[in-house]
Each structure stands twice: as structure tokens, then as C-alpha cells.
Length: 590
Image (cartoon, rainbow, N blue to C red; front, side, top):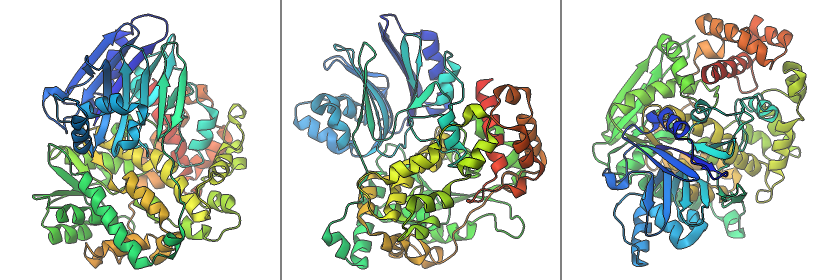
């Protein structure tokens, strides 16, 4: 994985070399192993490299093939690149590297933009044609890799990081009203193409964008998740679905072992990560390194799952490392985690994941991680509430949304009283074809939207802050498509994820399956107390916040006077949402 950057000009001028260097430099941590820039009239491209596939300089980027007249900057990992390499060789193409980047370049030449449909992996790229001047942007089906872009005078710039674009200057940093409504409704999720900054957009997952020399753009969606089932699907037994699912899981985990460096695993001790470790061991991985982070016990609530992770580590003979983080360190390192956020993320997991990534990066460069299983296989509490619902949109919003539109309007200044975007967004998404059952509608929305800009973005930002590549087998698009065919009733059993738990039972010890789900909030963030409360209060009362004018003071002061009284339906702090937003803005816009 890496950091990509570029400037495409529409005025016949050379790209701004200083701005491009700034964007590339701001992404150094994403790619600490190398850097490169390609400049020519009308366009420039930059890259920071993390060496995972083909460790030689033959795979350095930006990569340009003069015989084909094509160049590329690419961030991600394409797991089926060896198979595509062989297919392209059979068509007469010759290769000078053995990584995935050159495969993408030649696949585009062979098959045109539809080549993305052949890729299994996570990716964000820009491919340019020397002769036509056309540039093609692309982002993987489930948005695992980021792609941000902004318009400046006479040009379009792009990067893997939003703050990197801001640092180069020329960006409209006014707050987008639609994005603010989404942020304060969906616990910081801002669906593409929006970001909180009016001048920055992100390419939606599963999309291509063609940019012509005159600035004309064409957006094309190349993938859609459908929950359509045949009569055979509906009648298939639970046991048959379980066995088929296990084979799909094996394939997804095995694909993510493709690398020229060892691949480890994050082992939380829950079902999802434990299953991944078991399947990695089953696939023949030797000297498997696993990592687990834990926190202090608070108020009688356990702060770690070390014992369950150890059961799995012992079962499969992994080299296991427990990383204990005191709460004091969580809070003192919080500013670093905010610095690493491309967009503000309110999840308590961010700081824990940040510190875990730091420790893991000292030992390995690639890990598999368990994000996505809850959204794909129905692990959250609101899915049973939607089973058979006659008012699915209202039921979903009541369980998921942080505040209704009336409360939102009371909180923000009139300039941000947009229409009820969040409510309409859910209604529009539920109305899309390809999912008829209310549970399927919610699973699709959570998998393709809410997951992308919460857990997935968190994993990318926190791991890449230390040049660590995280691979997420539960978001293998073939597995996700298969899971969408499984009737919802099989997912909702056993309190959620029933079909996955039964598949896991054939691989991992029952002790890590038949137990309560763990969740370890950081009390200082959930209840906003002590030094963290002071920082939030000062940020919200600062001169910068007053000038920004986002929130009504009276409503905000209600939150400040009693933070514990203002908790979202999903048990998050409403004050932390406000404070984190202002803290992030002051970190990246000052």
C-alpha cells in the first residue's frame, strides 16, 4: 500500500511542482520505502511506496510503459495479480516486474476500463494515456482504499489523504452543510462523494472517473451489491450454506497471503479475527505472528480479551504479542491519532488501533484484520428489529441515527439547516433495486456505505500512519456477493452472525464463539471527563470555533454542562462528536 498524488491541468500549463511535492511529502508515512514524481506538460503524478509486492526498484512508481504509452500511480493490493500476469503473458505482453502495479497497467491496455472487473483486491489508482491525454481514476468496490480530489485554478488534484490536499493550498475549506448533517447523524460517516470540506470530494467505491484534457469528467459505477436470490438459494439448508460459506472464507483468507513479505494477523480474541487466524494456519502459514491490544479494566468492565486471544494463539501455535495500553497513554497520544485522520472519526477504537498499529509495524508490514463481518453477516442489534418491518426506513433511523432532524436543526446555526439529508439518504438507499427484505436493505447500506467511512477508513488511516498494510478478508468482494445471497434468517440466528459462527465452529475453539461480544470504550471519550473534557471545551469555545460558527452556543453548552446526559442511541457521546470535529478542523486547517 502507498500514497498517490497528482495534478491534472486544463489550461496547458505545467503542473505546480511545489504543490505536488507538498502532497507527496505529506503522505510519507503511508509509503516510507520510496518516492517518485513524474512531470510533463499538463499533468504530474507522485507516489510514496510501501514495499509489499516485488521489493525491487522495477516496481517503483510512478510507473510508465513507453511501449504502451501508459502510466500509473496505484495504492493497494491486487491478490489475483499472478493469475492476471499469466493471462496477459499468454496474450503476448512482456513484463519487467513481478508485482501487481505493472499488471494493472497492461490489463488496462488489454481490456480497457473494464479491467477493474477482473481485479480481486483493494485499490485506488490513476492511469494516464500519453497520446490522448485522458486520465482514469478508480477505486475498489468496497472503498478499502481512499481517493480524494479537489479543484484548484485550472486544475484537478488528487491524493490518498484529504489533509495532504489541504496542505498544498488552494482548497475551499468551508464546511459542507450536507456533509455536516451526515457527520452528526451517522456518527461521523460522510458518504461519498461528500467530505466535510466543500472543496474536497472523494471518489465513491466501485466507481471509475474519466478525466479528459479539457476537464470533462465521466463517472461510471462498475459494481453494485445485489441481494437477489434464486429459488435454490431460498430452499438451501442452513448446513449447506455453512459449508459453502467456509469455502468462500478459506479462499478470501488465502488470497490475502499473496506478498513478498510475511503476513501476520490482528487477533482481538473475537470470532472474526480468531477465524482469520485459524484459516491462515489451515492454509499453511508458518511462524504466524499475531497481535492483540488491551486496555485497563474500568468500573468492573473488562478492558481486554487477552485470555480469548491466547486460546487461539495456543491452538494454532502463533507467535503472539499482547500490547497493553494504559488509559493515560490513550489520552495523551490522542492528538497524534487525530493528526492521522483523513476525516474526523469519533470511534473510540481509533486511538487503540493507532497504538496497536505502531507496535505491530515494528515487527511486520502486512496483517489480516477482521473488520466487516458484523455488517456483512448481521452482527449488530438493529438487524433483528428490521426483520419483517413494515416501516424499515423509520426503524433503521430510530436505531442507527444519532439525532433526528429537529434536534440537528436546534444544534447547528441556520446556515447549516440543510434538508433532512440523512433521512432522505437512507430512504433513497433502501429504495434501490436489488434488495427486497428490510434486513437485506440495511445490510447492504451498512456494508457499502457505513462500513466504508467508519471501520474501513479507520483501519486505513491508523495502520498507514505507521506504514502498515491491513488486509480485510471479510470484504473480499466475492465473499460479500456470496453472503448477500444467504437468506437473512440464517444470519440473525444466535443473536447475530449465526451462519458465520457455525462456519467458524469447524475451525476455531468453541470457547471464543460461545461468549459475549466484547467492546472496550475509552471512558475518557465516552463520558468526556478530565483533561480530555478540558480540551474539548476549550476547542469549542476557541476563537476559531466562534468564527466558524457551526453550533448554537446554548445547545452546545447543554452538552458541556452534562456530557453523560447526552448519549446517542448507539451509546456514543454527542459532545465528543462536536469536540472531535472542531479539534480535527483546528489540527488540519490551521
